[in-house]
Length: 322
Image 1: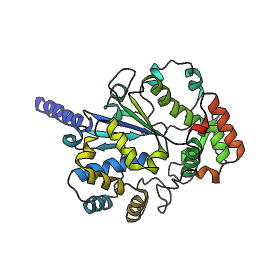
Image 2: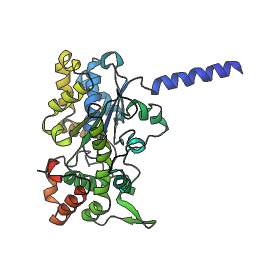
Image 3: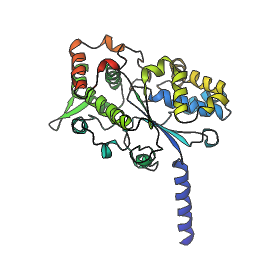
Image 4: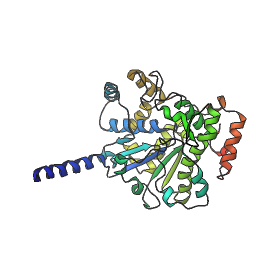
């Protein structure tokens, strides 16, 4: 019996050691705003720093049709970190600790679907996100948040959920009745704007209080100049020494995580790299173009964005609307 207990304790300790990073980097992204680009870049950079060639990395990915998860483990000896946590996280500590004058209005906003923000599930809780990355409690915490201009973001999300295997994202509840979004305009009015504001404000209002702890970046800057973007990220995390020491591999990771290269990998997979679409021919990158909203939105929808954002002292014209 004692042997069994010792073995059980040993396995639990090893399991805990395996899944709990002693140090991690926390990157939250708004949906359709660079989540996969970040996962791919750090995955490729780590693989290259582990002395794997581009061909080796791609061949291994294709052989198992690898889906890069939210937990991107990296070489601790090189990165001084164990992992990057990259998903649609809510800002740690905001809901429990923020008491500014917009809190009541924020409370009235709703996330229409449980997929966003990403839940801190049992596997995630072991990272102690609510302390390690909580600026309200930990003055050494560092948080990175990507957002996108709200017009493009809502259009991109609506178009993506039309093709997604997660069919439930096409529905919302009204008076306890389940209803399907009939069109883009209805999605924006009922869910899109609320969801954007609730997610964005949790980081923006926290950043106003703790500007040194948060780095807010835009999807537009990331796709326009990825080298500059990821240089800023690594500097914020005090990892910019990696660029100086491994410049060629840094640039190679940027190249490998480009839209063009990911689409090539998807062709080898025979499906999207995220494996989250009904049709195998659909790519994770549906349309990443800046200003694509112009092909979809009418003036009434734009006016609604402006009106709803003003309630939170936000000028929509300052969100890289192009």
